Length: 512
Image (cartoon, rainbow, N blue to C red; front, side, top):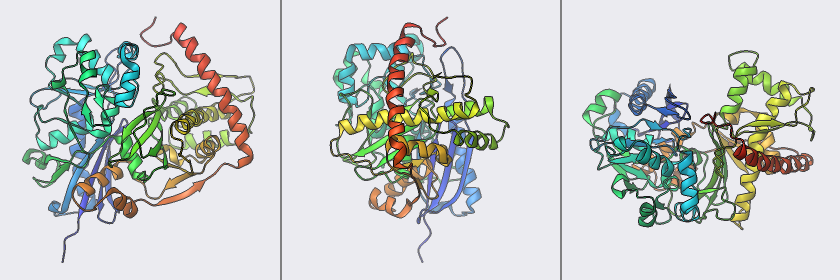
């Protein structure tokens, strides 16, 4: 009689580290989470402690094993870790962090974003797949020029998922890796080829030896060391797959393994993505990034709102009637009572600057308020702002890919619970929003990477067919489509005007 097989997927997200243990059928046997600790050491800085992230990963693994009741951890076929995508950690020769995790929310590198855009913006977009923004390239340049003494100690730049996986395996700085799903954020890659680009590195004097080796998502990068085994409970020698970015893991957990599938990751970052067969840098509008899927020959064109999913939390904390989860229910109920009207306020959701397209100076705002507007109208506007921004992303995707047909948008992440939000997105995007049954989000996607890496499934399409099932379809009635089209037109013009205003009169924290 054959033994049962188990798979572990760990997600290092912005709000915390989450993990889940699955059996071969895709059933979640246990899950656990540990909150993150966001640090604000100076103006515009948001960082995390990589050691705390790693210890959280070990704790989450142990808790998942304990909760599952699995006694023989030799039955765990593989582990995979995904993580936040656009930030960087500088590590030394020993593989240990010599910098904090420079988060994707950190905006200290804004001047280097502008420098990269001015000196080679079109070339970076063409080769890497994403225009310079608050991502790897400008952050690396910030460390190079603003902290040269620390930069001299850095052997390689990695991301939280790769750092944790390397620590579990005891890898050195020389053995550090980045998997291909992160390359579009690098600023120094030929993403189509899956290599570092000599020309881009030379333009900005970036030493290629400080860039990690590039691997596929399913490559086994090492095995669990004795030290890590004692800390987390996994058997020494358990294979560890390279993993992928957290957003890509969320795409995968929603079944984005076929051309034309669109995904809404309603998490800390509000992400809209279209799955396609070709690498298509968005030179037309400069809005979308193009990143590799975990599958060869499949790509994602997508854009996201920096902290878009944090906006409802912020509003509820300030204006909710309670401090528990019911504050969202009360606010959503109030917003649901508001009838469609072009006189309703519009909300720009870019509280920390616009990422795609890059407009670091832009800040959040309401427009068109009057004395009749209360919590319901304002909360509705906060939700609608994300939906309207998605409308801009959709239009860019349709212009880029002529054979793209948006039949449905699959939603994952904490925001998928909001019926009102999903109806708005359906109205703006003019397609059904589809929930995923029993979706553990990114931990499920990264567990699928581990399952394919371990040979549990021959392909991601097989893994998706076995593990991903769609659920409720949420639609906005077609007689409201014209209303949302007109709201989108106004929102598009408002963001254009506010971008110009914020450039001339910046609101960023670093400006007095």
